[in-house]
Length: 189
Image 1 (tube, rainbow, N blue to C red):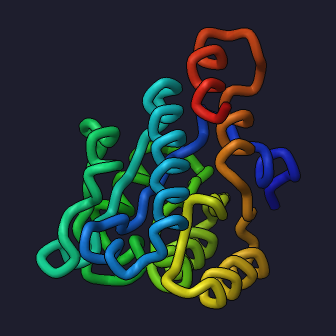
Image 2 (cartoon, one colour; image 1 turned 90 degrees about the horizontal axis):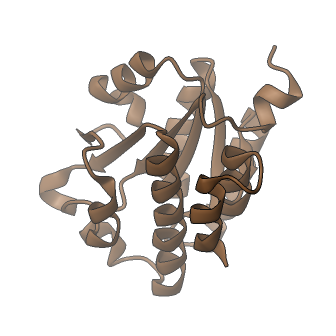
């Protein structure tokens, strides 16, 4: 059984950031303001991950039909692996599961869409596999607020921690005054 610290307090050395299916054609069905919040917050986490050497895994659902990851995020992904999938859960993609396993890390930070489909199914499978999962509520979305709310509650009931971008950032940073703190804290001012 994980301790409170292990379950709730993120460590840059134990985390993997996962960006689920933020793709061009899927984004067209989303509320523009909420989508902007998701991409802005995901970009903050991507910059922090790059600075703190946190691995990033990116998935793209049915690439031919939904298109690639949106340019607003793609430019910050660098060489992060992108995993094309057909299963709604990222865990249905062997390369994705292997990337997590090979990282040796147990804390998974989740962003992306849609909260009630691919995000939910991924979170449930990761929890079942023994990972400690945190869902960034201001960096996940669904077409409907009701579906978003329901999925967040279901993931909380299953054992995921529901968090926010700034909490993740400052847990990864741990202390003020460092060079990474000086650089990254500017992202949320």
